Amino acid sequence: MNASVVIMFLLIVALTLVVTYYAAKKTKTTGDFYTAGGGLTGWQNGLAIAGDYLSAASFLGIAGAIALFGFDGFFYSIGFLIAYLVVLFIVAEPLRNLGKYTLADMINARFDAKKVRGVAALNTITIVIFYMIAQLVGAGALIQLLFGLDYWVAVLIVGVMMTIYVLFGGMTATSWVQIIKAVLLMIGTVIISFLVLAKFDFNILNMFNEMKTITSHGAEYLQPGLKYTDPLGTISLMIALVLGTAGLPHILMRFFTVKDAKTARSSVVTATWVVGIFYVLTIFLGFGAAAFVGFDTILEANPAGNMAAPLLAEAIGGDFLMSFVSAVAFATILAVVAGLVLSGASAFAHDIYGQIIKKGKISDKQQMLAAKYASLGVAVFSILLALFAQNMNVAFLVSLAFCVAASANLPVIIYTIYWKRFNTSGALTAMLTGLLTSVILVVISPNVFSPVEGAAIFVGDPIFPFTNPAIVSVPLGFLGGYVGTFFSKEVNIKRYAKVKVKANTGYRENEVK
Amino acid sequence: MGSVNEFDSSTAFNEEPDFENVANSPQFKQLIHERKRFIIPLTIFFLVFYFSLPILTSYTTILNTPAIGDISWAWLFAFTQFIMTWVLCTLYVKKSASFDKKANYVIETQLKKGVK
Image (cartoon, rainbow over all chains, first blue to last red; front, side, top):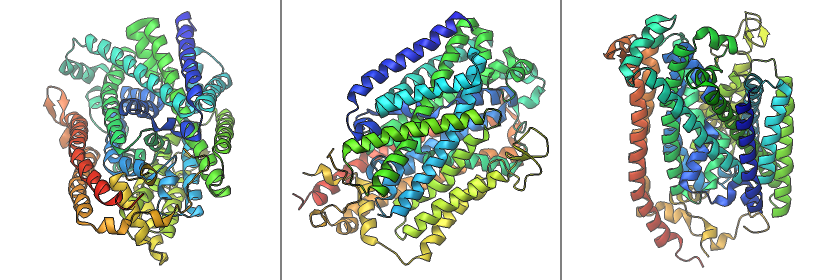
């Protein structure tokens, strides 16, 4: 570990703690804690969405995937970006207009059913835990490599930092950590891309021409098919990527931090530009790493290719750039896990404790306290799981989280807003079918069972052929909601009229005095 | 923010505007109709556009031919996805400004009326 790495690392820690200190002063009510008082501007929230979304899996994972597999690595970038059109066109504004703190609030705008809220909270918690373990285990391994710390020390550092942000600064601190991270990540990526492009004489054609011969894959490197050879498996993954974002609780929660649907809209647009530019630049990160670091060195540092971006920074920018990029990767992890803790805590404290157990009869002070305990609980639980999962290959949990979001959350969101006949039993069956099919199919998939020892958790032949089950579980989620609706005679036209009017106009009772 | 959470409790139904009436009003129906006419075709378009990339690369090799220099059609198609996203975002924001006006009109003329 050299001096510049330590300094950068401490700078990030110091900067985020200062932010948390000021955020703590502004966090007085439950609304402040969960939604930063709803006072973020479109720009701020847009950057925070980008910071919440561009996880280490995006920054380090995609750079590595493009470095190792060329075109096929780029599929992720495309899916993760187009997902924002689904968010913007279908989900963002109705969600802002109907919800308060959580996704379950929005669904409960139509159904006052504790069961529906409970299952929605369960979905949120499941997604948060899957996503969080993948992030923390990845973070531990990464910080181990970048800073030479032990795995458990690394997980504890990340865990303690995320807990401090959320516990003291709530959504305000979390948002600003995400904004800082988004800015740092963009600066780092632009600098590396510029240096890579300079090596190819600022000529993209020249870059593609050289990439054709520079790797051991030859011309195949630039063609699709190096990684994804199974057509249906590829399409299944692409379904999870494009539909999952619109059901991810920590992303959806961000829409409650702005004052109205118009600001929610402008924040998605900002996020789409930032995220889109970033994903275009992943080509330079990947190609650069393949050309100037080389497969052998990338694979030696980490078999999944996660070290491609930091190694590239070292190869073309020396120790200083490497330190900067490592610090950015650290900030990236912190921003994402803080957002996850907050959305997990909201499901426990607001949905399960506040609304189901206490039936909404709870003072603001009690709510805030419950939110803090829940944050602490979610954080401690995730840290413990991450410490146990050290030697497991958990990278697939990120795409599983996307799959659960797409199969269990998206159908119920769409039906709630757009389908008149939809009812309580449909909401329950939609969510449970989506959740159960995703999880069960993954358990019997090649992620968990592989004939090759060490490639997955158990040795054996997988029963289900695709690593990502979205192609089956998303249609089943929609079908489950459809069939479940007709199991019950319940129709509430009056309530739907209210939801429809509110979702489409942004009208709120409490604004009319 | 009140001190007691008002969620899930049916807040004073007698003071509430008649949402069914509003939902059936010509202005509101017009708003929904225009929004649907804008969103549904474009959503279908971007999903078809998006999925045609993996479908074409998985089942055919037609995108593997060079388009500009060594950049193949597959890469060009991939870049077009980015451009499409930004164009549709911009279109959506422009169009939404007119929806906002219509929605505000519904709020001002129908929802605020009769509520103290």
